[in-house]
Length: 286
Image (cartoon, rainbow, N blue to C red; front, side, top):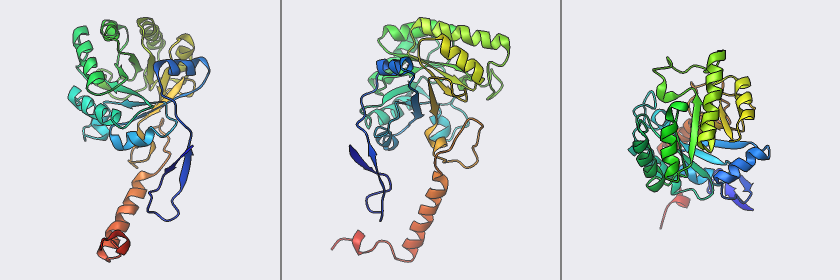
């Protein structure tokens, strides 16, 4: 077992954590997790720094999501994110990862037609180094899914809230609450399964509906704001690490407070530079 220093080599009393040897995650191993009743873990990742860390954790898969528009680029939505943006950030992640399964989002407007969808998906695999691509939509995108699969690329579906269609759905709202919408989502999930997708992400749907669909399809389901009965969960990494103290949606659990710890560290650094207690002889050269 390898030792990973979690607090920095030069910090006094730095803690270490034993990390078990991680096997390479594949489409087959994710499917086997569902068959064996084991939960699948997914987090977003947009850069090599976090990719290197996450590859040393038990997390099964990372999503280079178009949420990078909100998290990394300062946009108010993912809609302005381009294919070049996702290719760039996926490449940053893939260069630092060896074991974790990498999924890349196909941005808004990049899979309107089957031929275009396949061409753009190839870029995410060939240039970005992703192992699969994710598309938002149900039965209406089956031709695009078929074209991408024909290129030998695994596809992840996305149902429920579709951030790229937020104008159509009047913002970020729970989807599938009416009987009609629930039936449509079930039909879409089965259509995606029949088309050959490897997983389906459910975003902001009622927990009972997520449980029902999960039991009705053979492919793994990944939830965010979809209850605990999906085959796995996904969160935005920066959200679960507590980067933004003002972002507290119902579905989010924060596992750290990076906002406070970062401010505290920067304040301490500024104070020590000002007082000339940093750098010391230990950080200097003769």
